[in-house]
Length: 245
Image 1 (spheres, rainbow, N blue to C red):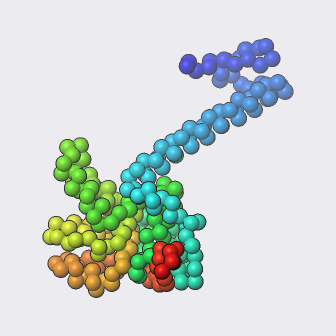
Image 2: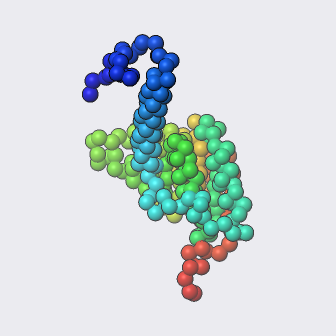
Image 3: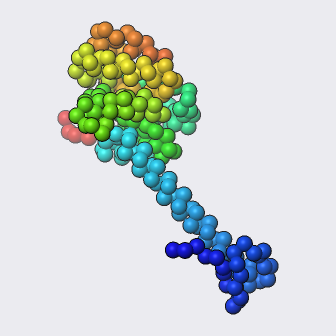
């Protein structure tokens, strides 16, 4: 469609660029013209924003189930109220260049993953980049790179180390090999050195994680402690509360 070069008001034609007439008919015409242009701009900006959000969510690796785990869907109790508030405050105070994080600890079914996913969902909606996964799923990205000529190991490392927030869910459940230990250390250490934010959830104590990662466990735990504020979650397993025991 060719751009308009002139317009018509009350049967008279004028070239674009001409000084706007101040008569009543012209003012009415220009008001509608400006409104339409503003709406077109708004719609285009919204399309561009939606495209950016779609891309961020695609790169986030957030599983479909966890996309429904928002702050609004979290059941707040006396046991988890402080953790819930800490998670909300983390979002409001989030600064990607400060490298601040959280580590949620506690037994299964207390909402650690839910709160972490809620943080990711909220930050993604604000157009921050976040990646979510267990050690196993995160490292699967590296394994896939070895079998895909279009994806390179370095590209995966950049995605996981440069995103605004990396969430490592259920740290300690993975089977530790020399390669897994090296990659976990490299991921955490690179983010540590570059002041990038990290959130960790785990059912284990940090002492157990240190012992499980026999060669670099002390270094991994030390960096997590420096980067992340501890959030201890207590209470009953919320999953088991939904069934008769």
